[in-house]
Image (tube, rainbow, N blue to C red; front, side, top):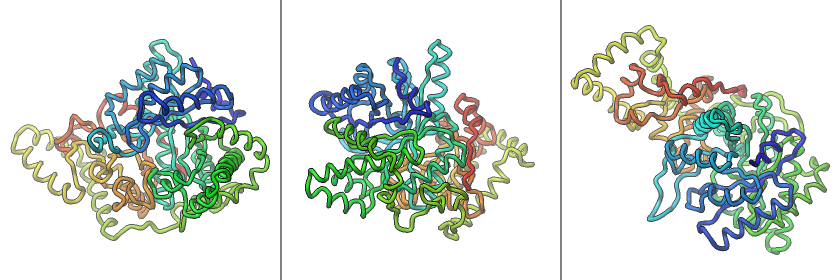
Length: 517
């Protein structure tokens, strides 16, 4: 069984190179032949530890990474399978994980996933039953079962992080969620794409400050004008290409040969800088035709890596008014964070609603509060008769609908999201932190609205409680409680706070190390 990637990335003396491949929409033909050809050449080259296979990138249908990944795996090339939460519920995801384990493909990049795109007959239905934290825990549980059955090798799971955020709230949210992912079992990290060396440096500093001793690969991309325009317009969630960089790329590619040379040089220089900053390796993307470009990048990197500090200025590309967690610029060692130095952008109404709901929660929804036994007794009596249930329905749902946009999930999680509803306010229903797709504080899916986790950060930060963004791990929604009273479910011990499932147990035991504020 291949364990090349795991062996390499856990060896501190190794600088790891992985290569991202994007399957096309066909099951045979040129696109498949191209991907297979690149994989074969990568294996023959010997410098690539693994190829990663994307899972319906952009939410659009493509060939399954499991199918083409297994063909590549059979060649002797280790693979990393992207495993998203967009298209399957937890039953389907567990079934898929068992299939991957059976065929030996156990390197998993666990992702929330882009929102659903266009498929057969129109836009697909987004699922997001689990998120990138809870799917890590699910894979950990399956690994325990695999080990108990006699297979010593469980899943080797990783996660993504998007450090290239302009606002403090989004930046904090990314690092808070990273700590949750690592606490939940992530063994490696791959960054989203960006060209700001100070942000790459920041991520290394944050990991040291949080004591997240997890090997990290920085993303490197062969940037063409077409790809640069798409990323500049925000159509690749989490990736950042500034106007300045876009104009430079367009100018370089006025002559195609010069453009290709410049793209290789930029990728090689960024790779050298990442190695100098302490990254364990690089993750190369943008290879769509053949492997030769990868070889040129690696050859050039080897020639210039000792001079990496000379190239830091090539990646001095801050976003206008952008937030940085440290004042120091690379390669200077970072010291104290700047989190909490700026006043969070929060309205008076938001501040007041948070204060009222926070206080109400402490009184009515705190199992340690003096009145908790009384509320439990009242709840037991009200659930026994139709009039009690009707009264509770009229008391609970209209108010929550007006204040929160309540969807009557029956398993309320507003206290985990700054007293905002993740079911109605987040298209991905995320309970464990922000996805990587927000831009300037606005939602990836609904760019006219603020990201709910950006709002949650601002609420918490305004009262000095930002670390609550990483208060353990929140179990997934209990669908068996749908359309029932969350108030009753809470006081009667039926919701995610009290449920006795294995995933709930592990979520309780997950301790996140948030020391950034």
